[in-house]
Image (cartoon, rainbow, N blue to C red):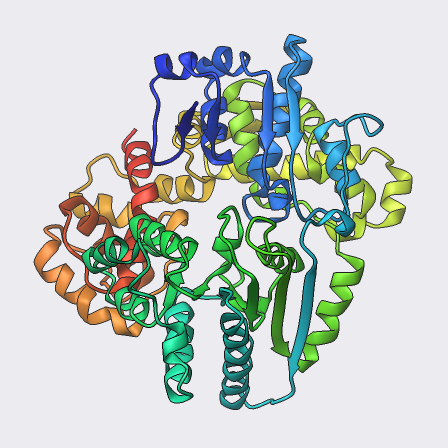
Length: 535
């Protein structure tokens, strides 16, 4: 058994010698995109996709393209590959079963709430206060009352918030409420615990001062921006019962199995980085978070609380009872996935691409719910297999890729021809919007400053935000750690990305925690982007 992720790479020899590979959808997508790896992929006989409801997430297109590629490989080679999908929150399981090619008589298993080994009490609380400050104050007090009640009964609690910054802020507020009400002793970690001194040493070694300070009072924080080592420490502390209250973001609900008698969702306003605005927390996230409460090995029951504004309460109650179906997000990734199939050689013209689209979850959902995909029921009546609409989607994607020079599209014949840029984008997992930037900015002779300026414009870094409190440190890093001139200044998100690229390469120390988080994020992409852009 071997792990294959962004952190762990395997040689071809190691891959062929491995019987079971545990990997991420993105990594498997990269491997199966390369024609030379098909022989290795064809030896796979079982593909298990955990958390298959991520089809509804921004990562969904990756799952769709892997399944479509696998099913087409089975048809081409006639070598059977069994596909298994697992999920705890899947309202329209029949659609997902159809997408995975499941025999619904013998291969589909659905377990409703009656199978839940631990009964779950659910609380829906709506705050009527319209003033933001007063509403936040009320939410914090309600949250504390629920959490402390659970701790008093000898249990632990998780509080879910919706930004990295909010984890520390909420944990500090709850800690202060405990102190002001004289409850601090109940929450403090017990020094007589056999693991206390060992884990306390690990906490002291961490550069995250906030984490160390909160631990002393029985509180913890956990979010994706923290270093993996710090997240591991927090998970250990919570699992051992040394921290009673863990304040975290929703990322903890997906995959990490920790004991919690009570979970509290504090607020339902979530920042959507793609839209650049706040929206409501999705019901799938709510159900996934609620699923963390009460585990059979840790207790006989569980409690889940959602605290929201009063005007959102009816919406969440309605969603809970009716359960909205999981929709496809494939249109957002269509162009990049089409390019990958073209480079692989599984698609060479519009007709074949239309057939390929028929293997996706997008196709299943367009037939079931056309209104969600800019179609009408009349469109479906006139074109029952949506051949025309699929052709339209493929044509638009091909034109987009043609403009980015990732392929050449002959509209008369419908033929698609791969280009060097397209091959680079596919092999290095670079989105076509970044390739478009490189095509525009790349010159025959470029200075190092030009190269860093170009890479900093990559679409992969477009969600990086410049925060006012970070600017002094960014300026200092630019002066002391950046040997290459930052073109266009450091006040923009591209300027910040440029500085962090140089900081990563020079291995400089970063103090600000949010900058550490962004540096961590950039480090996951920078290697392949530089290799790709220099190819």
